[in-house]
Length: 328
Image 1: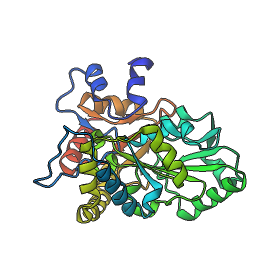
Image 2: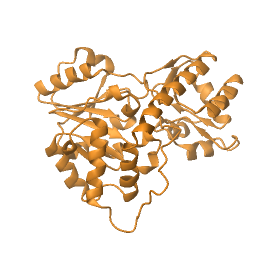
Image 3: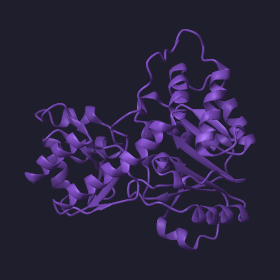
Image 4: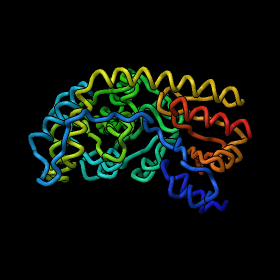
């Protein structure tokens, strides 16, 4: 497989269309473990209907943002809905955060794309602050490293003293409620709906920021930033406390089962985030090809060929993964 062909699978997870083209003889259906999306999505209750004919109701949007704010533990005036946290990342330069943006790497590919400079994670140990904005993920992708609220507060304080901003991408934080930093005077937090709730196609996310920045973002996006479907389903999902609590428990249990399965095949799973695990092995390239030939897509990395990321599967899919690994 050429480097260009692999590039379609290393930039983002979820590229099943590219995998099908590259491995046309793989058994179907494909099992997509290349993302950190919950494999058991939230489902709307019977009777929840969405009228997509009129423009979305602005009062319903305000209710969604209030429900999300309660879920995040912040004030509603600090929350704005966006069509996915990926969009929010790309809007950062227009929102008024300090420039340049410095991305902590390795992390999301989009972080590197929107930043003009990069620093290694090791640089944060003695971080004294820098003008502009420091962008990091918590928990981090792909290694699942989780930074405490105390450490994030230290970084935010260092950035504020230097006249800068801290931007925290909490796309996976719903699975780890202790991971949320909540924001601050010069802190911007990005949240994803689709990963924890298993509905990435809904394209819904949120920005938590000071009210003046939230208003600037609303002015950029206009009166109807997200669809009626996203508003209705998002509101019902954030109000479903029982599902949220049960899912957090189930994700931890599934992640532990994946850890044990990988260990049985000589692979050490790393990471605190219960939506995905990272493996480092000199056999990474061979394992990727082995699993792809079996119709299982995991996430390879062009800049770290020894790494693989596994989304956490349900029990029946875990059995399929183990069966494929036995032949490796």
